[in-house]
Length: 549
Image (cartoon, rainbow, N blue to C red; front, top):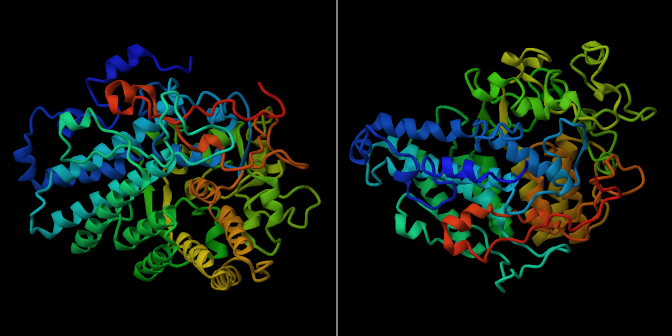
């Protein structure tokens, strides 16, 4: 049932090119508007531009009625369950189980297809916008839209490049059956100017080539995006461009520039302030409100979105344990890894975002929306997170509404918070001068998170590890930390005394897990021969859990 259906692929291919092969005109055909008309039509350019943030809300990128397929938040969630930070109490409703258990991750399965289709189409959406704007325009509004499209495209490529880049692991070899070494290869590059002929023979490029392309887009974004203030946080501004540059420099381990651009993002962000304890623990706006001052960039659901109308195939359903009709409340509870929880000081208010074990000093100090409602909503099937240690209370349903999807699911999703820039600045500094990094993280933590925080040790490894640990807590459930696992070559440890992972997914690795080198769907090589022999190895089954299902 999990394999890609050939009939489905045949039906969808004429409508939209699945991979990055195929030109923009073929991918998004229009029967009433020519390219020349689009270039002359500001409203058309605006329509294309508005499609970029709207696309993040898409349900069923692959038309298969799979409830794990709900746009960009799906990417965030599956990245999180692939780390050693998010344990899940599974049930028959846990549709992310294959990412948690490292099963069916090969090129012939729909799980790989969904990820590749999502990023391919996001890139195509940005290319459409760029293709609809005359690059020589002097119209400031169009220049701003162009800058935002460059930033969106850089964002998409940076995500995908870090996911698909093959880095050494303890589970797979980089040498393909055809004898090719895929180490450091990312994905192919397609722009609004890529010809149909070139798109059909478009090989993967290595990290250095991809990095230069991404930085070129970000340089263009920086050049044009200042032409006009953004109308909404759903569109990137200059602080976001600097934040994306900081992420990109961290990826290639250019820590001096990462530190510089993280600070530029902080200094450029107008009105951005670090989350307070009250904001963090808020039962109404906690991690669901686009207007939150710390958010530099975010995604926004609206009531008319199909994702909202489903009531359950959206960010709130899968991320908020307190939304009673949602998936998480119904069975696959999301929990913080027990060992990570225990590494955080009890004086750190962020720890109260999780249900403390019975007898723990923080037991009873968690902030629920309505604990009794969780237990009494359905007497035959109470929402057990209220009594399940380590269950997350971090992501709140919209307006704190635990039942009504029209309020609970109409929320913002954080794409970039100013806090990330502080963590990038601190780690980048630590990679160069450990003492400076130690000072920066201790200053941030004692001022904003935990007055008792100190870094134990002073070596680079000790300081970087301390920052990594705090970043894991800070960005739990926000889809970011997998990139740090992969870059820093951190193992995933799920099998230990007191672990809260299920036995069929309690893998321990000695390096970054093999599953963090994502596999391209087979169809890409079918439509783009340059991919043949250059796919990442299938990581499925390369680690042994305590119990295999």
